[in-house]
Image (cartoon, rainbow, N blue to C red; front, side, top):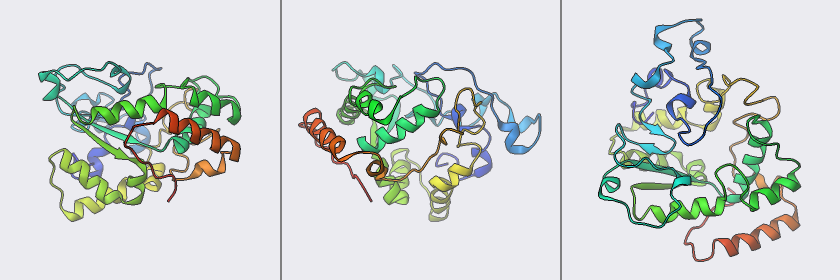
Length: 264
């Protein structure tokens, strides 16, 4: 919406999984679902070929830029320790949004329950251990976050916190716009805040992934956009689990100057 100056119609020309594809994740092809939005079985404005849409090239995962120079990188590919090449240094920009580990674990547990492409997560007690061991999609939360936290000093990375977005979305959207060298007036900024709220996006067919077949995402088990709150981990973690996790967190994140908000 920042790229399109809060033009809702332009942002509705392609569903989120087409505009922001998981470039490092192979999964079954998905119908576009655009016809569900406009109410027509076929519609020129809802072409499934979204590559020509201005909104398509704004973000791919967390990559910004009309053209990607040098090596296209994702978090899972940035494991080696090295300095960026000249091509990479002037290449794409990255938005990285980190969420506190406990809420992330809860959210991903429910996501994996409804995601028919991923292995069954088992019980909460079983998944608690699985998550800590890093045996989940995209690997260890600890390694993932630490890796990007370090890369922000050597690459064009805007490191954001999910909790900050929930607390003050307007301020965080301004930071993204500045990172994109995009000027937004107050009216446009306020509209973006409104249209990108969790409640609004949960009802939006273009963002809630309701067009994805049940054979891939079964939202009768758990909605793709579930709660979006900060601190829901307290409804899942036992006292013993919380104490164990805190101890492991201190060990794995030792020396990392990053602080997460655990509740609002």
